[in-house]
Length: 107
Length: 284
Image (cartoon, rainbow over all chains, first blue to last red; front, side, top):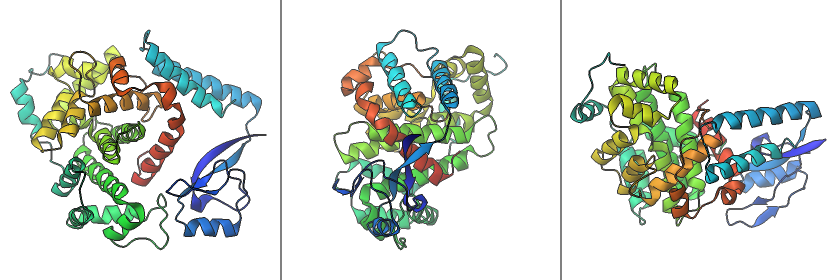
């Protein structure tokens, strides 16, 4: 099963979820590392620390066909958005970067 | 297309004079963006002096977005927990969006929700571009929120012309500014800058509003370049689903020393920020 990271408010986080990225304090120090499974105690500790959002792993339950359809939709939409962009090196680069970004979780 | 008498520049300026000013407290808070030494006391006093703004700021500060343990009951506590810049941004965004909502009410041709999505989208993109200081990041955020206020001013004070502009754009599949130029002879960037100047906004904000579509000729200010790039990026990320990427100034990218490859790692952060503000402000 494919997984992807999603940033959610702490109150929506549940015990058993796994972290998809480090939790840092405002000074940038790592409090909890990627991959750690959230527990009741850890969630309480994060709440006390004033952590507002965490990035957790979600399983992507879509089938290969559904993902392919999503990828086609992304491509279609980007082509619509850039339909009047013409030949422009920087807009080409923007198109590529957004496409890669969108396709990352659909790969 | 010729059903309306063409307005002169003076008539256009007189018409947009009717567009309501930002509340004094919000305008005063925006002016602190010009001042590296702005103080917490001043910010707190300005927010507390406007009952509506105070209620909105505290409601938002206590929303799940910030999840402050035990909540905050006054502005100073909010500054202690969230920081001066975060509270100033919060006051700016709630003050400006409340004002836009009020001004946009009852103007059917104007899609207020989409306008809000776009303004928030550009603000979030502008905020995350590389900045020289926190003040610059905050100014970029506010400029993003305000950059298209000329459009709202047109819809508010010249509703017939606004409908024609929307029609022209649909017919010609062109950028909004082009349609405005065709109908009015000026565009929303110019009108917005006139208003911002009259309201004594900091120069950086006036220049950003006025210069965000200038892609040829004299180089606009650094802040205008930032809002320009942020707007293109926000369309590419499809905030507000406008459906078209506006023309990009390669010169603006060069002046800022930016490439989209370099901005790519920020896309996720920008989207999170956009979703957070949209949710908080109830913009869908």
